[in-house]
Amino acid sequence: MQQTPSSIPGIEQETHPHRSRWCRKVIQPCLVSAVVSLCFPIIIFLAIPATMSLTFSLYPASSLSSFNVSDSHVATEWTLVFSIENPSKLIPVKYSHMKATIVLDSAPLAHAKFSFFIHKAASLTNVRAHFHSALPRANELSIKSLVSGLERGEVMVDIVLSSGRRLSFGAWWVPVFDVSVTCNDLIFTVESDGGGLTLVVGSSNCVLGFFGYV
Image (cartoon, rainbow, N blue to C red; front, side, top):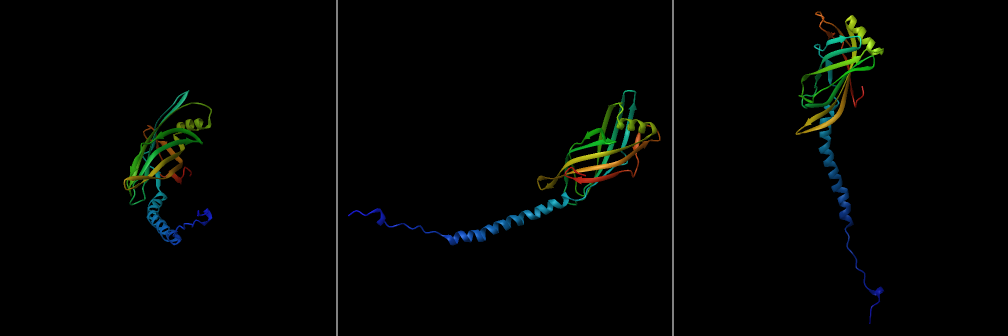
């Protein structure tokens, strides 16, 4: 006699709910704790020097080395030396894409770019930049101020500097916050030999910022 489908005995599969629950309750938290325990010291190790207050200033050797005022153009040559101090005693810093702008009466006067360099831990580095401008003599306020200052032997400008940064971590360079610096009301006065204008000592007032904001 043939068995009907309804009389075929069912096959029960053995499951292991306790093992699955044990994995979720024990193994997963252990993995999370291991990852956090490994990453947290690394984050702290990099975060502290990334937010340390760097020291930027202009070296007294900075100068408006030469200038020429004609009926049609105003040409200037600037040599600025930035002193940068790395406060971290352990981590070198790589500066890249560094650029600076000389600003007069809120108008850009000259630009310069720097080659990347590595700043050793707990050290002071001087970085030199050369600026050149040849502007048409127009009725703009900034040009008038520049000509007037050159004629009386005293020019006051602002400097805006920005740079990307990477921190040394073993064989890798880890990118951190970009840095921005503004040095306000820098005064250059005529030299005794009349060859150019030099930076007045103590006139540098540099403000540090991160993420491109000051």
